[in-house]
Length: 113
Length: 113
Image 1 (tube, one colour):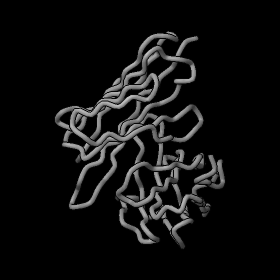
Image 2 (image 1 turned 90 degrees about the vertical axis):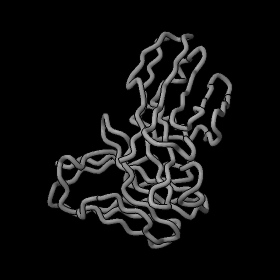
Image 3 (image 1 turned 180 degrees about the horizontal axis):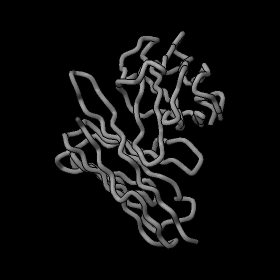
């Protein structure tokens, strides 16, 4: 499946580093999402964008900064992260932000040392 | 806040046995979705249920939506090793005139050959 791609697939970063995660969808969808998946916890929705406009921000710390330059691309800028931020970060897209199924990317496995 | 509880957290079955996972919501859901995540993979959409009491089948998988639209179940008949993975439900609720998709914590299924 190549509808939603994410890079990098794996990332190890120190607490003082700045890095960015990239997501691209090739499905013509209008909505894109960032999720955090930690061990033994439900998927946590972080941000929702609809037509490049942020429509949802679920109390995410400011060390995570999203950017949506167009409806096909979504970034998550990371800076001064904590070890507890280590997780799988999943990007997803859907036709509209309140519509049916979401298509997930393969995720970026992030480790903060 | 709204929660979607999913049980069991983990189930280990012999190939050929049946398997069921249950989701319960504290509030009425507009609809419920089911996703499957293979080990090392990302969530993949399986189905959406919308109507009260709805039952849908996909080969050996049977999905039900409760009459009160607060609970749902996924039943797999005669499990196969290809069924291994984590099954998530995701309930859609209306909060402040907008939709939110809330994921359950998932049920991890292991199948002994």
